[in-house]
Structure formats: structure tokens, C-alpha cells
Picture 1 (cartoon, rainbow over the protein chains, first blue to last red):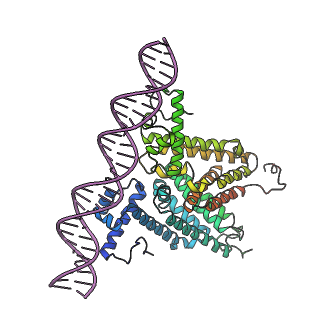
Picture 2: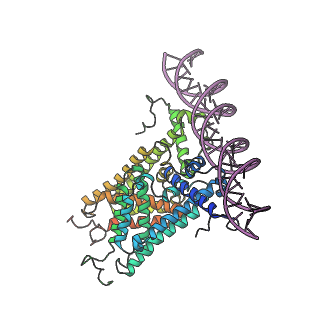
Picture 3: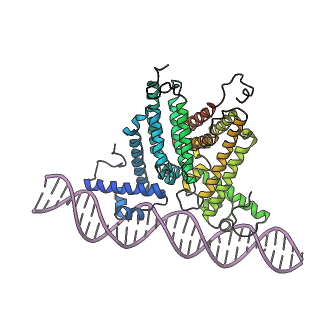
Length: 220
Length: 220
DNA sequence: ACGAATATGGGCTGTCAAGCCCAGTCTGGG
DNA sequence: CCCAGACTGGGCTTGACAGCCCATATTCGT
């Protein structure tokens, strides 16, 4: 899964090289997340990562290759986070609320926005050829929600009439849009409202609850 | 309402000057919408608007002032569109569906995204001092939906238990997020799913309909 | 242990765009 | 009819950043 980003031949990186590359990547991701792609230059990156000029040319011959690598790195982080045990594969409404709660408590939500979404929006109109990679990542993200919702259906936690794809897009869109609005307003309120409403909507497909802590009655 | 963007003294623009300024603004908005802020330079703008260099300095001394003016111009357009008679002040679910339908039929939705949102996302992390203006515009946008939803409540079209502010943020967030996803995927589907789901959620607050074409039964 | 390949350091150059200036033209009021 | 102020045109300078190169140090395979 880490074999991307090098078009030419075999792996030609030693351990130390890989470590350096990873360090550059981490600092690049952080800088880009806070300052944006355009406002991040290689001098800042050099200072932050404690390296000097020619490494960037060596590990990332062009800025486009660096940005692409950062996208992959951020995408991997976000997807891994959503797949983590914390959210139990989104098989319950509670896991969705837990998920929303995390981002609502995360200060950087309304400061920097989504690590992938804000990056995507900034560069989607430039000539950088990264759209396909972004599209792929967002598809996987959507699939995480969709698969969870489908499992909820299988468990009878939401009605069979719910459309998991549509709900997954609602969750992801509300998240991205809410992040943008929160960032612009410097206030978490828009994100909170959007996520609560989106999850409320998923809940409208839950069967009327009889006893609260047990699984709902047999599916229909 | 057009008195913004000039910090210094009285209106010092003749009719011809205003026309030229407006022409520059239109072309700047179009270029920025399609190519992004960063990829739009003054030479392209000169050619597009049929003017030459020093006007930009005359009418828009810095790029920041130009971008700010474009934001105001786009915001005014978007808000005026949403306030137009077409949507009857969003006093019904049908008007919401009409609204969604418009953007789903608009090819540029998934090509360029939202004229205000994509602009906001691109420059929110730069040092351009335009955040307040953007925040203001998005607040007004939210208010259009919120006011409409409140009127729906007054007319008994949705339950008093609905939270108009929250629903307004859901609609706006789903729109912005859906626009971003559609743009990245080059496919209208994510926007369609998000908007349908968001409007479906508003509809869950509608009283069960008895006869379809009449106003719903008296408000509780 | 040795040699070849690979990583590192710092500086250099070409490109591009924003901001600015001077000279010429037009419009409107008296 | 005239003049004063505003508009227009094109070119120029400065600053910033990405990409590149040469000299040196280090690491890895055998």
C-alpha cells in the first residue's frame, strides 16, 4: 500500500532514505494543512524538516509529486482513522455520534478544516494532476460510511428502505460543507448543526425504540 | 448596497469608469470561477476584459482588493438568486426541490463547484483578509434558508419541533460538501445524493399528508 | 575492508506575476 | 472654445519561488 508515488523502476530507497522521505512528508503535510499548498514553499519545508534543498529534488522532483504524496498520506491517515476500532466500522448510530463528537471537540476543525477536503478544494482548479487520486480517496471514505450503513440494515438497526449510498454522501457532504463553513466563520457551530442534522436523518430510519439498551426488535 | 470596496472618500468614478470597473469585475469573477484565484493573473484579465494594465491598479490597486470585490459580487449574485421569486422565499418543500433541481441541472456544478464556496476554500488559508466578508455572506445565505423554514413552521408545513437553524446549516453544508465531492469526482451524483437526503430530512418534519395538493391540515 | 552507488549541503538561475510609472487621450464644466 | 481632472495604454522593475547543479560525506553490497 506504500508502493505509490514512484513511477520509475524498483524501490531505490534505503532505510535512511525512507525515514527522511517520511519526515519530509510529515512536515509537508503539517505545513500544507496549516498554511495551504500555495503558501508553503520549499524553504519553510527545509527548515521544518531539518533538511536542505536538494532532498526535495531527490525525493520529490516537483511540487506536484510532493502534493500528490501528501494527499496519499493524508488520505491514508483519514481512512485509517475512520476504520479504527474506535468507530466499530460504523455499525451503530452511536458510532456516528462518536465520530461527530471527535471532530466537534477537535480545535483544528474550525481552524484548518478537513485535512483532505481543504487540500482538495485549494488545488482542484490548478493544473496539478491530482484529481483522480482525490476522487479515489473520497470514494473510499464514502464506502466506509456506506458499508457501515449497510451493516446497520443487516442488523435491523435502520430500515431496509434507507439508501446507504445516499446517506453516506449526506454524512460526508455535511462533514465537508460543515468544515468549510466552520472554518470561514471561525466557529464550530455550523459543523455541529450539519453533523447533528445528518445523523438525525440517519436515525429517522431507525425502528421506534422500545427498550433503550438492547438491540432493536427483530427486523420488521 | 454597491458602496463597498472603496475605503477612500467619496465616489470618484464617472459612469464610464463604473462601467469599466463592472466589466473588469465580471471577467475577473468568470476567470476566477473557472481557473481559480491563483491561476488567474492580470494579463489574462486584461485580455479578457479588453483593457490594459493600469486599470487594474486604478480600480483595484492590489489583488486582494480585486478578490474582495469578486467575493462581494459573487455573494450578491448568489444571495439575489436565492431570494428570487423562483424559490418563493423557500416557504415550501417544493421550493427546496426546485432549488436542488437547478444546481443538479447546472453543468458547472460539478465542473467548477460553488461560485462562493470554491473561492472561499481556495483562499481561506492565505493571508488575504477576506474571511469576514465570506463569513458574512454565508450567514446571509443560511438566513435565507432559516427564514424560509421558519415560515414553513408558521404555515404548519413542518413541525414546530424542527430546528430551522440546524436544518438551514444542513442544507447549506450538504450543498457545499456535495459541490466539492461532485467537483472532485467530476460527477453530479454526490451532490444529488446529498441534496436529496438533506431535503428528505426536512420532509421528515412535514405532517403526514392527507390530500396532496392542498395545504396541510391546521397547524396542530 | 573496499569500492561504487547513494544521500546530503548549499548555492545558483530562469521564470513568472504583482505592482508601478510616464506619456497620451478623452470627457465635462465654465 | 478651453482647460482641468479623470481615464487609458503599454512597458518596466522588483521580488519570490521552483527547479537544478556541483562538491562532499555516508552507506550498502560483496
